[in-house]
Structure formats: C-alpha cells, structure tokens
Length: 110
Image 1 (tube, helix red, strand yellow):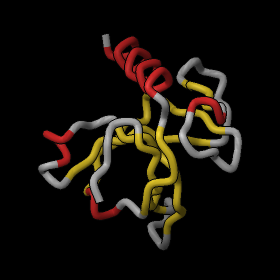
Image 2 (cartoon, one colour):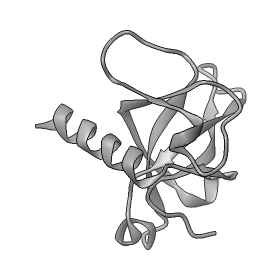
Image 3 (cartoon, helix red, strand yellow):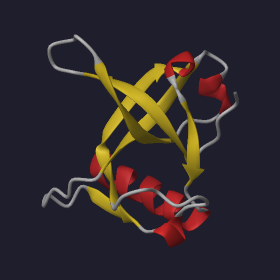
C-alpha cells in the first residue's frame, strides 16, 4: 500500500522484554523520496497526555476518520521503519493539523 504524509497508520511497538508487541498509531511525515527506499518516517501518537509541551492534541475535526480515544501526537518521537511493518491505515490528518505538526517539529529542531 502507498502511504502519504499525514496518514495515520498502525505499527507494531515491541514490549521492553522483546517478547511481543502492541499495535500503536503513528503519523506519516515522509514523502515519496523516502518511501521509494522501502522506509517510512513516522511520529508517535498516544492517548497519554504528558505535560512537557511536546504534544499536539488531535480532535475528530482534525482527522478524516474518527479515532477511538483522545489522542496526542508526541512531536519528538520520530522514527524510521520499514513500510512492510505497517499493519494498516486508519485515518489521515487534515492539512491544517499536519502543517501544525511540521511547524512544531521545526521548532524543536531549530
């Protein structure tokens, strides 16, 4: 499957004992140049609010398909993984929220 910037996908996140994994959501931030390598860049989504100013709250108005729980993008939790590990797409961020995410990432790396 082809993924686009802003897609919300489900990825396996290993347990700390490496004896299994949980499926977790993440936002795609990479473009086709990265995707052509077989990799994909993602940013973690969580339902747990951290009080460190590194969250972006996602409402159902921010996505194309509703998310099952209150969710936050953890802007500093950026990962690269092989596309084949993605279990599926569940939604996409709307353009305004995606732009907010990219601006926040830019702020923390400037």
